[in-house]
Amino acid sequence: MTDTIFLGIESSCDDTAAALVTGDRRILSNVVSSQTDLHADFGGVVPEIAARAHAERLDLAVEQALAEAGIGLDALSGIAVTAGPGLIGGVLAGVMCAKGLAAGTGLPLVGVNHLAGHALTPRLTDGIDFPYVMLLVSGGHCQFLRVDGPDDFTRLGGTIDDAPGEAFDKVAKLLALPQPGGPSVEAEAAGGDPDRLPLPRPLLDRRGCDMSFSGLKTAALRQRDQLIAAHGGLRAQDRRDLCAAFQTAVAEVLAEKARRALAASPAPVLAVAGGVAANRQIRAALESVAAAAGARFLAPPLRLCTDNGAMIAWAGIERFRTGHRDGLDLAARPRWPLDRRAAPMLGSGKKGAKA
Image (cartoon, rainbow, N blue to C red; front, side, top):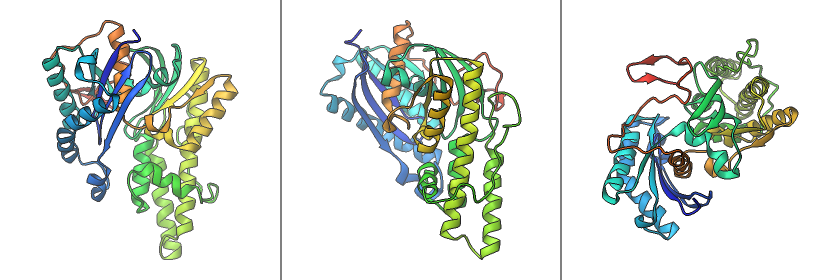
């Protein structure tokens, strides 16, 4: 199926993305329209602003993706779209755009779990076989998975509260650093001493692969307040040291939990994906864990760490090959756990499990 070409549409948070990917793993185009400037004054993503921006930009992103690939809609084999989980306004905008294209062209429509897009990225970039262990780590999610197929995920552990990316954003905010917080904290940490300010390593005293980052964030807040009280303000070096201490704590927690995940479910590959996978210290810590376990370590290129349409197109191809098709009644879902057999970690309601 090397002649398969899928359009992938992604709009689950604050990046409007469209891409064209082939069945033999070639990325023909990968367009991402960032909304960072729109949300900069609010200290985080505003769902209503994000949804409106997606509605305004999706058709332009699709047009640009087609133009960069040098093909038309008639060359496509299908359309894949993020159908959840995510901010419901943005997800709905993407699903409606995909439905319109599918209805107008008669092309197959495949709804994709956004998290599956991240989890299947190593198959796109490196062509690895199933199974493998995946750390999916981003702004809203953090879980260890055993990946046995395009729709076969077993959760080995996950966060019981904040995801690391969310914690990075909150620490950046309390230190008056720009959003998104991950790159800002990493840049500050490069000049800091990670050992100067003590911070906890939550849940390392408990068995298993579950994680917690809310208490670590609170501990960073207390350290900041103590520094301000001691010096009449937060000095530049204090900020750098606190960022280094926080980043190191996150990296060490993720590394130890990755070691446990590989021990519980041995696999030839440890992969990482999601926005926080762009952090160099975290990558290095995970690479060391994989080497010690005799596993290959895989991390996607930085451009495929954050939300993008290429991962959605590829996940759509994977599902398409198993015979999956969706109708025009495809629903946008704010919640959509990958492992539907596992008990919810973050609670559940009428709309389903959160994770």
